[in-house]
Amino acid sequence: MKPVSPPRAITMVALWFCAVASCLADAGLDPTGSWRTVDDRTGQDRSVIRIERQGDLLSGRVVRSLDPRDDPAARCVKCPGDRKDQPIVGMAILSGLRPSTSNVRLWEGGEILDPDSGSVYRARVRLSEDGRTLEVRGFLGMALFGRTQVWKRAE
Picture (cartoon, one colour):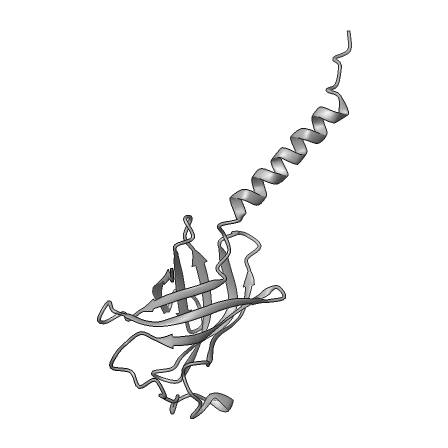
């Protein structure tokens, strides 16, 4: 006797359920929004970065300084190119991040600017499972040679 295959309606409902469950699971995997940067040396909140999507790419700009010692009108005197002597607040410091093909919480292939030194590094970011922290890694050459900051989602 030949086994009976499930009716097409049941198969369609099962596929729909899997698709909805997948979308709900990925809903918290979006790094867009506002993030508080934390100074590596002092552990104090330093600034707010707004990450936005431009097509498939992520970029981020400084929207506010949180350090009372910072001059709100500070300019990036050490920055290269067009960013030289431009105000830090409003400046794009993160650009060109693409979603990883191997990890839904990882974006890579971009660049990050350190406004304090004017240095530009390759960058990758990894969103935590709960979506509340973002590991931001800047590096030269290989990711092994770099520094990671943990940014906190701004409320």
